[in-house]
Amino acid sequence: MSTTLESAGGGRSAVRTLTRLWPYVRPVRKRLFWAALVAIVASCTSLVFPLILKWMVDGPVADGDTAGVWLGALLLLGLGVAEALLFGFRRWLVARPLAGVEAAMRADLFRHLQRLPVAFHDRWASGQLLSRGTTDLMLIRLFLAFPLTFMVVNGATILVGVALLLAQDWTLGLVLLAPVVPLVVVVSYFEARFADVARRAQDQVGDLTTVVEESVLGIRIIKGFGRHRSQARAFRELSRTLRGTELAKARLLAAIWGVITTLPELAIGAALVLGSVRVADGDLSAGTLVAFLSTALALRWPVESMGFLLAMSQEAATATERYFEVLDAEQESDPDTVAGDGPAADGMRFEGVSFHYPDADDDTPPVLSRIDLHVRTGETMALVGATGSGKTTLTALVPRLHDVSGGRITLDGQDIAHLPRQRVRELVSVAFEEPTLFSASVGENVLMGAAADAGERDLDHALSVAQADFVHDLPQGADTQVGEQGLSLSGGQRQRLALARAVVGRPRFLVLDDPLSALDVHTEALVEAALRRVLKDTTALVVAHRPSTVLLADRVALLSGGRIAAVGTHQELLRDNAEYAWLMSGGAK
Image (tube, rainbow, N blue to C red):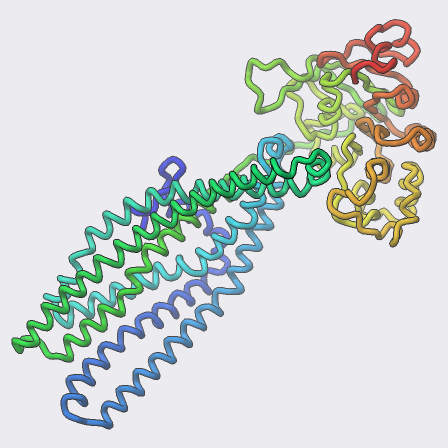
């Protein structure tokens, strides 16, 4: 098996790849062992049939003993029923534990995805991740349920069958063994090629899944711009590519199957001719020839199915490799030692902070460079800058969605790099410009930002601050399901719920990325009035594009070209900084 199964990636053997499944299989290994043992007994039961036939032909049939013939028939019937029951029992043994293995692997994958850094998710297409959690895990479960067991079962059956053949007549046995070496060579060649095609097919399934997901989530854009034909064209092209790859797999599998079927059939034919001649010469009994050929025919399926099982095993190895590509990705790491308490009230500090994206080229200029900024305790600092100046990136560094490339950020004197991420995210609450809601109730979406013991009073307070009283007019109030991505709500409603989620936990630090951009003027004024009361009790960094939002802040920081260009009050910067005045007058945002 190890010689014929080669993975597409770097020559790693499929056996070595599949052994990585052992931690998941280990808890159910006893059930799998008994299932394999039961299947071996059931499979070897079929090898008893030829022995009974030999006894019947050379005994009752030759002697005209009718009772003996009926006895042999009953024995054959009993063995057939026993074989069927044993295979059914094997299926029962593996069904539940293997469903548990698949569930455990899927849970580990999902848990790991939640702990991977944002940079990982920026690089990976969601469809590729979805295909690893669905199609690939299904292939792995099927491998554990069928090919893994039956490669062992068929191997044992073939060994027992060959021993019986040689015991019955070693000359005919050697004739049947003649194709073994050519079979190993040919199957090894085809399996190496099948590995490449299998990997390509599974990657293309991920690409196709990505297109489908993007088309579903972006259906409003597609319809709004009349791009359904171009999306359909892209889908057809990917489908055509995948179809071609699947046909290539089918051709290889057909070639493997053809060779595995043809060579043994030729050997059986040769054994039949040679055996018939020997029976005619009196060197071999008719019963022995019948038993020999029956045994050879009983071994046809174990031999012929090996190519199919090897192909399924190769697909499972590829699926396992794809699964562990994600699981091997490095998680967000937390410090071994947690920093002690800093000064009681020092606010939020950026000290020499620089940042460039992990996958950026070394010669790419940093997005942020030497950021020095102090947001005092209880102060609201507005962050203003042109498009591409780095505002959103800077706000993402505070809750450690990305880690700084240089310098440090402190919250009340504690370096966030020395704090567990969970602790940082308890201290800092965020609301992004693009509000993301989940397929859950309004209340569940808002209370995601609260402590575990938060209740209806906290929910009502947050909705009031965000001017989200529209929730009470929904069909089931706060229990109303908002649907996928919250698209059943307007943009302004989604943004208000995202703002409510940010303030529901009454955080010590608040980071808002242009939280009012989707609101009308009247609602914006009401939200700003409510926010002023909330911001008095927290330290806040607010990305602002409009003067009305800037007026919420005690001071303003101007970010230009990845650096802090000026800090002051709104009036001071209007008077002394031309770039700021231009931005506030409606310049590029």
